[in-house]
Amino acid sequence: MKAHTLVLAATLVLAAVFVVTPAGAGRFTNELGCDTLSTKPLRILLRLELYNAHNYGDFCAVRILPVVAYGVPINPILGCVAPSELVCTIDSAGVAIFSANTCLQDWGIGAPPFPAAWDSLGMVVGAPAGDYGAYLIIPGGEIGAVDLIQYNCQVATPTLRRSWGQLKTLYR
Image 1 (spheres, one colour):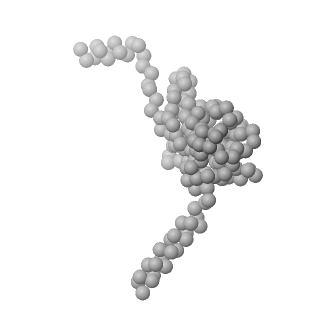
Image 2: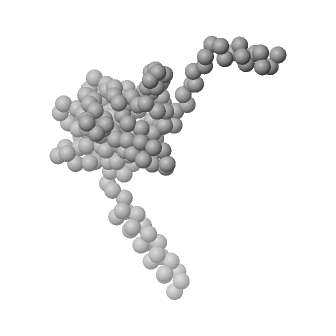
Image 3: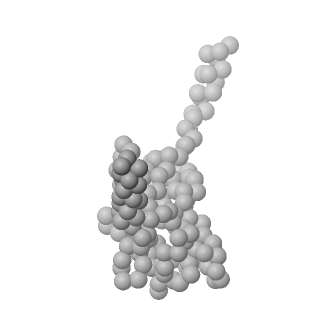
């Protein structure tokens, strides 16, 4: 009797996992690090790549928007960088949209003429930490997959020239 109940419970758990998991589950973005563009005002380039490991279908666009996650406040997107195959725009709500002129087939799987991943994408922001929701848009304007992009970049703290001398005096 207990074995039968255990099998039934395991079956229900597996069924729930397959029903709740969307067809587009899985990552299609990867954080590649950060570059400091300027310190006054602070501007950081958050580099990322797009790849198609789960064969999501044709690529039309990716919408990336700042979100609040894990206690990290919203870090607005101020600008963006895209490879030649894509166009990047920032809308009035601060959402970065990386789009193709026409939807692209066989993207991000290494099939010519597309690379295995587009790794020259970036977003310009004003703080070193931020979380972003990424939405893969497929033909018909449908969302093919959803991903969470998280950055916690280490930014060098600028020092003043006179501070080094003061530090040496302190320890002499």
